[in-house]
Amino acid sequence: MRKNSTALVTGGNGGIGQEICKALSNQGCHVVAGYHPADQENAEKWQAAMKEEGFNFSIKAADVSNADSALEMVTQIESEIGPIDVLVNCAGITRDKSIKKMDIEDWDAVIETNLNSAFYVTKPVMMAMMEREYGRIINISSVNGQRGQFGQPNYSAAKAGLHGFTMSAALEGATKGVTVNTISPGYVETPMTSAMPEKVLDAIVSQVPMRRMAKPQEIAFAVAFLADERNAYTTGANIPVNGGLFTSF
Image 1 (cartoon, rainbow, N blue to C red):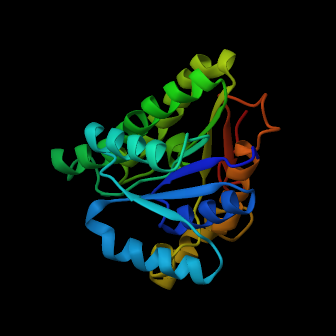
Image 2: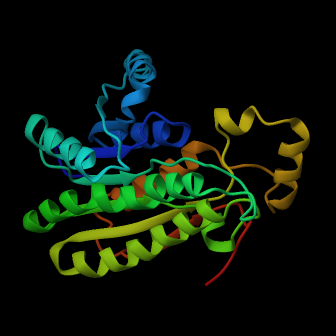
C-alpha cells in the first residue's frame, strides 16, 4: 500500500465493512468509515470499540443515496484528511419482497442505496484519482447479483448493476492508473445472519458446496488484495467469494 494512503469505506461500521476497515488499516491506510447520519450514536460507539482494539478509524456521516450528501462527505475527507487513494463502496440495505408484493418505495430505497450511491461517491473520488493518476476502487456486490434470488428483485438488480458500473468505470480509469473491481460475496457470517432462525441458517448452508458461510475476514482479504498498490493490472473484474455457491467463467 502507498505510504500515508487514505481509504474510504462506505458502510464501514457494518459487519463486512468493519473487517474491510481492519484489513486496510493493517495495510497501512488511514481508514475513514462512512455511516448514515441516523446511525451516529452507534457509529461513535463502534469507533470507540475499534480504538480499544487498536484501530484508530475516522468516521464520517453521509446519506450516500443523496448526491449532495455524498459529495459533501468526500469533500470534507479530502480537505480534513487528504486525498482518497482507496474507495470501497460497501453501503447497502435490503427490502425483501416478491415483485408481486413490492411497492415503489422499497424498490427505490434499495436501488438508491445499493446502486446510485456507488455513482454518487465514486464520481468525485475517481475524478481526483485520475488527476493524480492513481487509485483503487472496489465495489461490494453479491452472488445474488449474478444468479438472482427469489424475493430480492430490487437487491439483485442493484447488485448486478453495480458490476456493470464497475466495468464501465474500469475502462475510464485504465489509462490513468485507477483500477475498478467488484467483489461478489455469497452468504456471510454477520450479526444479522447470526440472528436468523437455525432452520433458515441450515437451509442456506446446505446450498453452499463448502457447507459454511463466509467469514467477513475472507471478504476483507479479497478487498485488501485488490487495494494493494502492486495489484495494478487487475481491473473490471468480478471476484466471487461464495464458497462455490455460484461458478462461472
